[in-house]
Length: 365
Image (cartoon, rainbow, N blue to C red; front, side, top):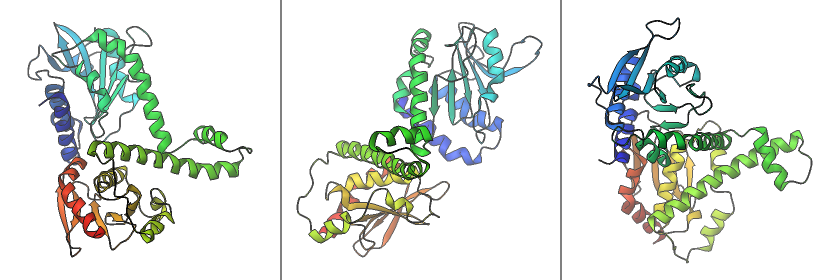
């Protein structure tokens, strides 16, 4: 397997086993050691490469241990501190990393809970670990742009100079991307004001702020949906659509907001990003048969429906993603009988592309 496939396999392992991992030791054995071995390429059973429970006396601190030290030519190259997978990572967890970083030759420090890996170096001050990571890998949401930088950290091609030279740019790009993602999810006043003052000429009063908070949130969600949909259409080669369609169907769809207003239909429902991503995949597949605006979604307590023309009598698919472990894709036959197919990842929806298209064709005929 190539590096990207190894990462995907590691992510699947974490996703499948995370509910069973309750302790720090279990996290190390199930997630961190396999990561060091299969992803970084070091032999966890060779003390010349990986030293568990690494000890280095630090000032008045005696006998403190760091979870793993990655060795290269007899020198400490990388320090790894682990926390249990059920615990979100905080900078307070890195206290030992800070101390050890200053007294070893390590230029790379890693804080992890087996799901997220935060990589640190000393950009701000020599031999002093930065307070913010230059690279963050989330195995449950892998950023593919980071893969080339991760490869530089592996045993076979370890390139410290290249890593450090790229770390400054990575650090700030990563922080900017995470800040943008946070604003899309829960926008702050400055974010709301930034967009409001560019489209609204009046004073930015409390009433205006409340009004535009909703508008900016909806606009950003719609923008993300549009971007994802465009990329999926390009990937599937769905660049042309049937021109003929009934006027009644068009009026039924265009007489109401389609993409984002559905999220507000039932305040008890929580539409997840994973459901929206699954919807975009189904929609992109269906777009080879009909125009995109005719494929809409409707969330329910037990499933997430994808419909043609916002019509309950024209179901295209159902996403059963509410279970903690197993996901299912529901597809329909000519008599509207649903069959559920177990899927491990959203990519597996593409395996059922023919059935999705046939369902849409049946409604059109």
